[in-house]
Length: 233
Image (cartoon, rainbow, N blue to C red; front, top):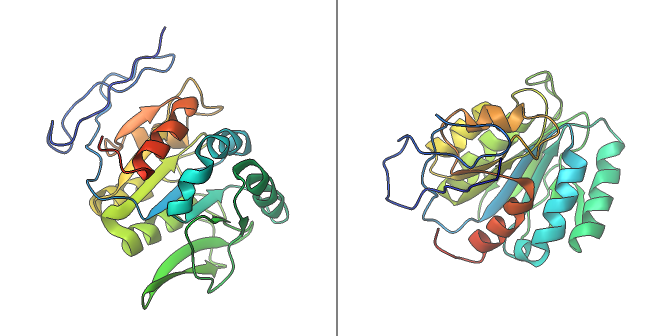
């Protein structure tokens, strides 16, 4: 089956109204979409698991310079050591600084921050800045680091200026965070089933009805570039 994109236009339908989602191998009829936030994003946050390193490589290879405008906060389900290696690889692919987030670090545009294995990474406002917080609390959704704590904190810190991506991964981590970001007025894009190694996490996000689009992986980078470039959607 060919892929067809059906993206909502701002103001075209009320929040939660039914709309056809892009088709990726199987029909996704019944998935609801919501309009993108009218706010320019001030942050890009990403959650992923199984198949994530490959998906992130594709994504960062496409968006490169576009992230000079925003900090990028990533939670990839991985154990310690491997997340540092992932950050090094992302730096090479994106041509931008990337490293594991450090406690108290002020986030800066153009830098990729990866949640360190074995710790949850969140952010919080500190005066005029937004800083990284690491915590050693229990696993969330059987994961540590987990996506939901990051998404929840980003929604609180950035509100409607949040752009979130839920990429390939097993389980449903990020589902609750998707709802939190949507309640704050932010925008979420989920990867489609056909291009996902496992359509657990992005599928769970898509079925909340709170995503603005469900797209094949190779279309997410160009869409993010347009959004960060200020194009109205």
